[in-house]
Image (cartoon, rainbow, N blue to C red):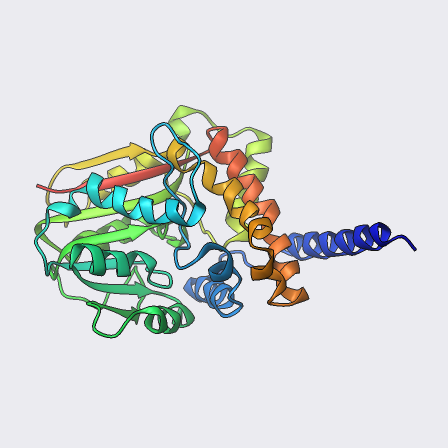
Length: 311
C-alpha cells in the first residue's frame, strides 16, 4: 500500500479519536476541583509547556498587530501589561501577588526584570510543583496552592495584584474582584487581563453564538465569562475599591495568538511527537476549541479585556 495512504489513515484515525474525546466534554466546570484537575493534567502531560513554553497565556502582537514569534509575543504581553497598568512605576522590592500564576512564567519576569518580590498562587498543585522547579534558586518569587476566591492572605498586604486569564474559571466574579482588591494596599496597583464575553447590552447571542459559547465554557472548565463592562462594575462596586478603574480592549493585539497556538505544533513537531501517540491525540483534541475561540474573538462574541486600578 502507498505510504501516503498509510499517512492519511493514521491522520484520519488520530483526528477521529481527538474529535471523539472532544465531544465527551469531560472537562466542564463542576467546582474548583475540576479546574485544579484540568490544570494538573495539562501540566503533568507537559504538552502545553513543550509547545508554548513557560507562559500559558496569550501573546501581545502590537497595535496594529504584526507577525512575531509566539513565545516572544507572550513575554511581550507581560511587559506591555506592566507598562499599561503602572506596575513599572513601583519601586524595587515591591510585593506582588500573581493570582492564577500557571507555571510561573509571568512571576519570574516580574521578579527578574522588575525586581519585585512575587508570590504566585494557583489552584493546581502540579502547577506549583512545576513553577518551583523552573524558578532559579535565589529568585524573589514563591508559589503556593490557594483558591483565588478564598485568599489566605492579610488585607492590604501587597503593593500590586496581577492576574492574567484566571477570571473565566471563577464562578463568582464579584467575590473574585473583592479578593483581588482586599489584599491590595491603599494606593496599590491592580493589573488584570481576561477573556471576556460581549456585554448583553450590546446584543443578545444568536443560536450559533450560544452553541459556540457552550463549547468555550464546557471544554476548558469555565463556569462563565464576565463582560468587560460587567467586571469593571465588579471592581468599582467592591467594598474594597480604593481608586478609579480603567479598562481597555486588547482583542486585536492578541488575536494572532489563536492561530499560533495551533501552528506551534507544526513548527515544533518534535515537542509533540516526543511525548508519544497519546500526546498527539491530546494535541488534536484542543484544536476545535482553539478554532472556536479564534472565531469568537474575531467576530465579537469574545473580547480580551484589561483592567487597572491605581491612585
